[in-house]
Image (tube, rainbow, N blue to C red; front, side):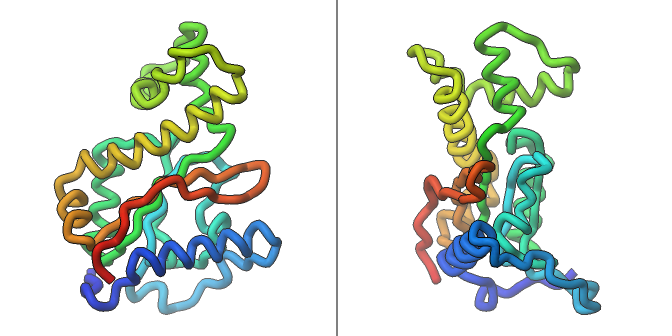
Length: 212
């Protein structure tokens, strides 16, 4: 599989601008995501960004950012939790395609986050050990929110934001490969939340790129 070279990979700041513009088109109704299949797709892929998000059916990254086939390397898992095989997928994109921007994207009304909040509020137990493993990964990211009283809607909103930021930090810290690329200015990891009610993606934080 051919690898992208350092010089021809889209810089993180330009990749982020492209995503922002795509989301603007999506929100305004001008989007034309997944425009067409073409034979060139079989030759190679050159995604300009990795989007690591939730598996919720209402949050498909290609539509949210109005990008076409081959533009994004998308990883989706309930609650956008960070686990070894998923980290490996990000490393694969950075190493094989030279992709320099990684967006860790949560979303409002996330069922996995809500299940975690329910478990912390009421002591509920998920229906299976596999679902429990998702809750256990999210819990350390949001349990500090229970130190003070809050309305449920506000707590859920804060939990989505906290889980997204913590997952982005975890992704940086759990991979020596990505950490080294970040230190060299080759990769940027940004955290974002997609609002289901408006369609708007809000970027919460990002590493400043050190190289163009």
